[in-house]
Length: 81
Image 1 (cartoon, rainbow, N blue to C red):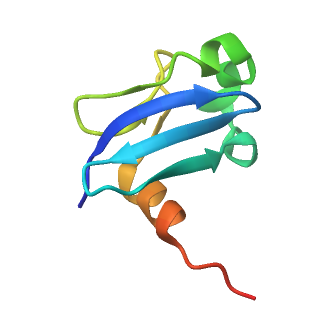
Image 2: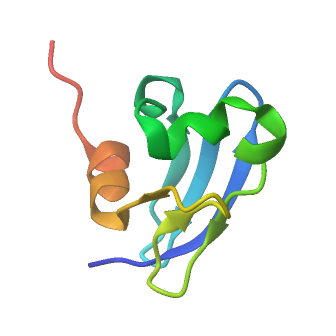
């Protein structure tokens, strides 16, 4: 499984993510910020504290995290018509 090498917060609850296999892109996070663990991320300042943790997951100091395989699938999914 490719590993995330870089993540950056963009405006509007979007992230730019780069993987070690060259896959890169932006993902919209507004639809994923539900539940108690993601509540602190509704604050744009907290959302901006995103980082790649030691396991290669997208993470925040609040304890919220996202699995890299799900993000990779989302970036490489072929849209259906």
